[in-house]
Image 1 (spheres, rainbow over the protein chains, first blue to last red):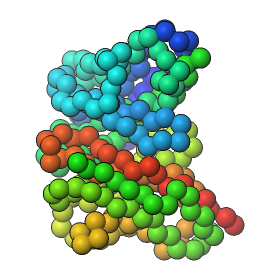
Image 2: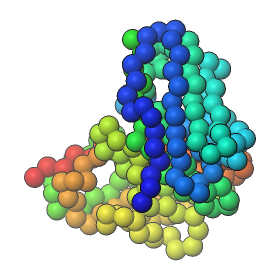
Image 3: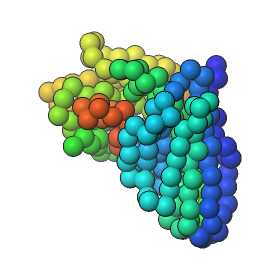
Image 4: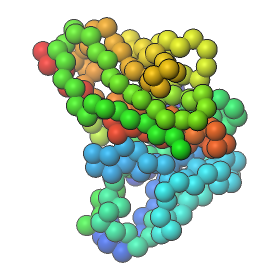
Length: 115
Length: 115
């Protein structure tokens, strides 16, 4: 079965650089979520999109922005990177309606290292 | 506000022994509860979920969990652990009361399986 695809899987950037992470949801899923997992930490919700509109916002820094495109893929843009942004970034997708919206399927993650 | 507590940071069990991972939640309404498993460097895989109905839910890989409203708990169990079960386990609650679909995770329990 198709799963959530994230690219790149690994990314190394220097401080103050920018990074773009991409997420391709499971076919027919139109809700996308982004989570950040620091070393030894639990995943923290950043932001979500439903039908290309932002649906909820969590602890996403102002330096980060995201959007969902017409094909439902999503991109997380990160600017002015800081050392503390080094983490595993997960994308998840789900059906939007009712209870189904809570059954989120996670991608393998993008490991971002900021040096 | 919703929160999830996993009291055990690290648990070690022998292969073939039974397992119980604890999860306590705080939520103002009937919670949507989940258990995810994460192998090193990998994404999060959904083991099982509870929305309503039967309080004992069956999941994949032989796992089950029981929702106990009186104890605000959703403990994960497996009767006989296999070496391949060694991983990080996260309990999560869905924030549906606010109309949002994002998940709040506990801090995780690392399971080590010894021969």
